[in-house]
Image 1 (cartoon, helix red, strand yellow):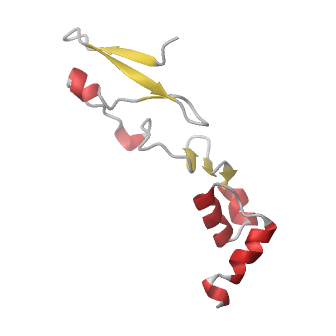
Image 2: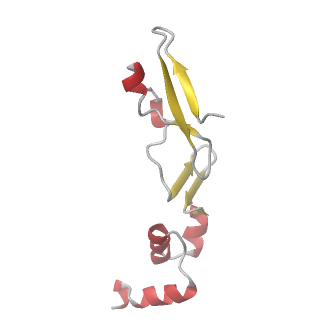
Image 3: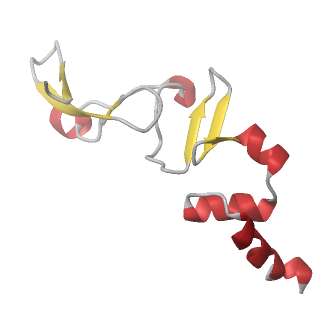
Length: 113
């Protein structure tokens, strides 16, 4: 099974094979990077509703479902249970700090100097 989608311009008969890309969560997407080069077309998506602006290993957003995740953690959970420094550590390293690394980083925090 091919991981592409073919788009044919009915006016010209030209076809473009575009790759399908998948993230960790959510629906797959069509990579339209070569659409203009191959068919001379751009996409139009009012309100940026069905368009991914970039690949991200950090953030997942589904506005229709009200989902915002950072590194797989719901934002509500992080806001209620984690400090600013813990969330910063998560964004940079990919994991929440262990209790030991939390103690170490809190002793070197600018607020404790």
